[in-house]
Length: 515
Image (cartoon, rainbow, N blue to C red; front, side, top):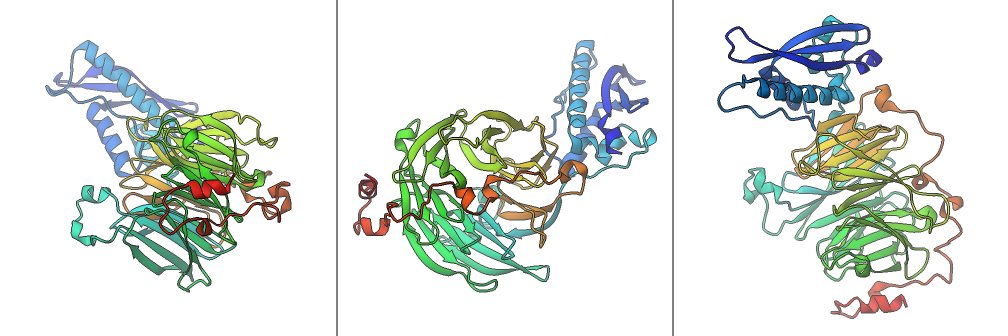
């Protein structure tokens, strides 16, 4: 069925006036497989089609030419221009798999009368939502093994736009953490805490069952989840960024990467919570106003990838102290919102695209090759930017969350297969879960305070075959970590707590320890 719909083409071939010459009809030549037919539509029917698609949560749609104030245009030049614009709108709708196979588009083109294919639903289905309407989502982590969803929130300017009464938020409530647990297929909230400071970032480390909260005041709060229904136990508070906000946290089974507004990068031992290496990256920033805002740890090759607000990705060797600079990926002026991987590829969300780079299995100094980029045709930088990226290695899919709340899904092609409206405001956090207990599932977190679980339709386009190779981030065991053993006895260990004076705000005391 889908193969026939994939051959569906439609083009506006001519325009003819209606009987009273008040407006024009547009004749559309439609082809699908060996069938060919014509449909005739008015401008208002194109408008209704796009409104219907928008109401059905399709996003990233083409825009119609603007309506004229003095009624429908009837002069030949205007009609020709409109005919070309409507032709482009149709091509954009048919170009994308999800809109092309939708019931609305099939009805519009009278495909039911000429093909025997059943309509296909490629849109993900929202299964359930976790919500804290007071705040935007600032962090999202999942643990299928422990059946947990962990969400952090921070006070968001979106609240005023939501038209909510400000009194729902107490003056001293600026951040929150919620933990949800699933048992017997039912989700219940097992922990909630509100903070007097914004919670800027959250990450979970599965093997040690710890989660880390990066706070606006520069502290990293460390919690241990000892059991499923047990309240998390606060085990440590790390002061690593001297009262500057923590901008990003990323945890691997061995290390925690912490980035701060003070341009500092810190790599912590997950188990001992001692500082492994770090330092300020200010010399690597393009200007004094720039700072690190996203990161990724490659445990296999002892590399840290740090995305900056200026649009660079810094790659550093973190096998020893201080970290050594390897290379920089210069993207453009757009900030690097998030970094992820898909097997041997690095995915970098910046501006209105996701750039794809080869990770390279050779030496750490080898230049990474750029392989391409993924975009959404009608969500350009003027309309929206990409603020999150995740991947489903088992299906070869890439997910991107946009600043207007859209969610896009890409396969191998550079253009999106599916684009839906997932959130009222920016879709800034994404997690893919493939565990049998409650996957396969995509979770999205948004500026509207909601985290939604989505089930993808079982369609060949979105199902994918399990690849033969393994993502390096999923490799375990000695081979995955190479020859550099960070647990060597002679590895320099630094405890930042022991280095700092009572009221010190200088970074020199920590930097000195790296010399």
